[in-house]
Amino acid sequence: MRGALGLGSVSVKLSQKAGGTLVVRGKGLDLAALDDPNVVFGFTVGGLRFSGGGTFRDRGRGRWVYP
Image (cartoon, rainbow, N blue to C red; front, side):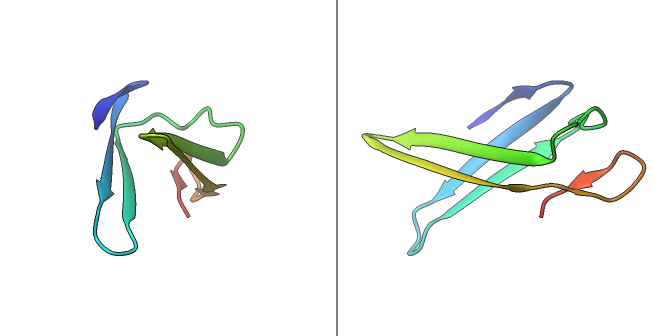
């Protein structure tokens, strides 16, 4: 999946390999105004619901990274 978010874009990739992998990538996102460093991601596949979360780290000068 791909889509626009703010001034940038986000893509989501789900792998069906053993153990599964979920990759969320953002490009050109403006996180300078981020006042809550927590991120929560939820999605539904068929009748199943999944969610995960974590905290961004401030790398200085308005630059945030995860984890």
